[in-house]
Length: 66
Image (cartoon, rainbow, N blue to C red; front, side, top):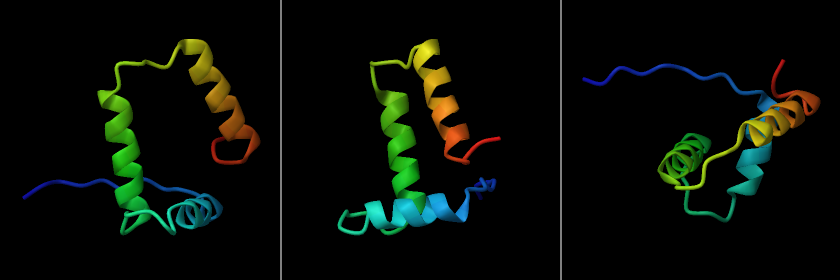
């Protein structure tokens, strides 16, 4: 049996993702997020520290991170 954990996402973000994947072959937000994370982990292109800071700042500005 596999162990699972829960990740909390703002409802507004989940609604945005649901709208984004409406015409995509993903059955749920969970499937889409898993796909994106695995794709990023397997990518040869890494995110630089500067890019990571920019992404984090943008997410804070949008209210997705504190």
